[in-house]
Image (cartoon, rainbow, N blue to C red):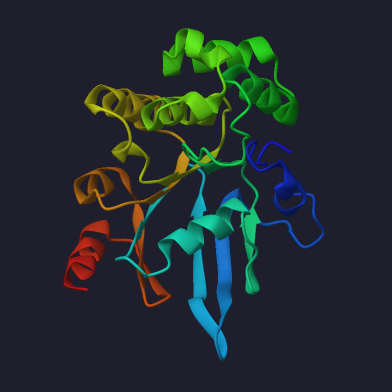
Length: 243
């Protein structure tokens, strides 16, 4: 089950592509089909996402644009399997990452090496392979032997990003990841993700419009839970700027 988020083992059944409700698709895709998400509120239900539909194929990159409250974070949680949709479905016939640099799901008592061992078990990878990758990228050295509750926010970001890149995915789910860390870390993160893995599919949620314009092949614009997909990213950015 190569597309199961290592930091969310309790969600493994939701992300298993062998589930009966994950119908085979004619091509390798990640997509949402008529996706609806509602939450209970006082006196009824609030619909946060309403009929979201999009697909990306191997090598394609889609931007998700929307102002605060548009439903971006909810969409990320659904795509990652952290929550289930009220209706509609998500299809993953490519392996997909958990949200890049997601640091939740681990006990603060776990050391960096404990987290790596867990990742190795979930993905059936040699621990040494995971360790070498994370150690090289994170540059945390002896701190990897310490509980992550003792880490600063920057150290947590380094560990989380390093673990995200230790597994090779067909599609990466990216939620404002380049905004974390200092300038040097951001440059290294960009190199690892967008240069070395430029042939991978990506779902990029963010506000860095210059980066999105350079990287993405399409864009999904969210407003009040509704969406529209644009093949012309430049035009999508103009629409987004008027919202």
